[in-house]
Length: 220
Image: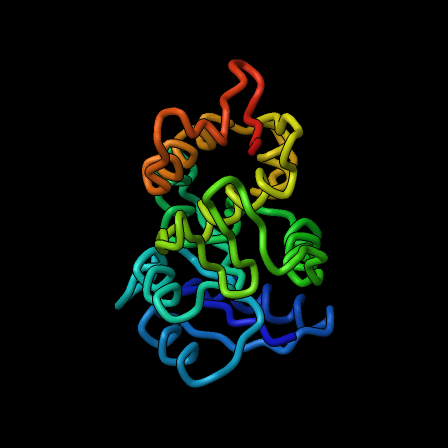
């Protein structure tokens, strides 16, 4: 598996490169966002590790540019930014995961392995008038395409895959965000509000219900 690391701190870069190469991964590196984007365009990568604060192009800007041409590649932010709003901003830009510095290298390796596991999902999911194409990462409502961010797509897919089951906020944080420690689950509500607005379902089409104090359930 080929991993691109975009990180401007030489010490962290060398630590990550050496450690991940010892784990058997092929590593390419860039010390600024512009070079990282050039490498992305010139090569095939299976995963990207991305710092937030980068010269020439920030990690946030780079993530958004990558998502314009590739909606599937896993992108993991490595950053010291840790407020809820910053977390939301990073995830909304299209990142799949968010690891705060300082972090455990062993945890990082396990997170990477999770993103390399082959999905066992069907090609398509449905919820009332909503159709989800898991292969092409597209969502349609009444045959009209709905543009979702990567995280919104993953959250909607998760709820539909668990149709008929109550998904608690803690389950969603662990299974969709892959975060296994105490975390502000209020982030989920922000994404759910955005999904509902984009799907533009009628009031009577209450396909995703909020279970107050618990979580959400998707039902036809």
